[in-house]
Image 1: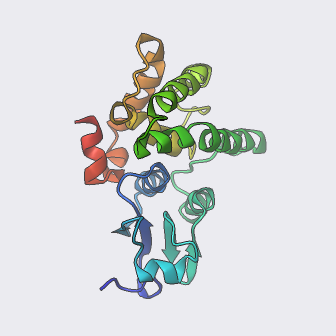
Image 2: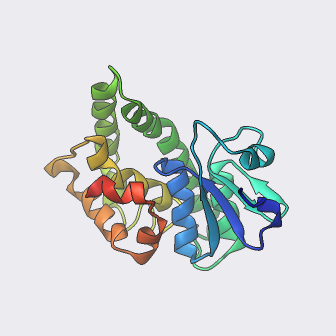
Length: 207
């Protein structure tokens, strides 16, 4: 029986094993070094405890005592403000707005293709091609700085890195042209925080 998240003394994160958005939140928590209860759920059969907390029954869902959050961007920004060190957003409003917009574009332009590939079917090859094209079109953003649009790791990296990590699993080959993206990924993948963010299912995506 799952303990009620409202009775926990630490954060509780309801997450699935392979979803990019769930990985995004886990990477934020790992980067912050925050202790939390990771509750892995079957997205096709969400537990009653999750349904009591989140009317949509979706993941990721974060419970912090009496506070429950379930929009991924809201969860990530809450964690960044709740645990301010290290900061994962730049200080100035212009840079913050750019990073937020970049995350929205990724959610709209990249993630649907990942979902289509994961689901299989006739559209897989088209989804792979389109995801590859979207990533390569973003090469200037990977070349501009050590991290994605920023000199330091940010909330944008917590979304981008899980996507790059999944490319072999998704069957997306960027070729030599995509080397800056692959190099970017390697810089993050070797960090202790990234390793802590992975589920067992995600670890084998690059085995």
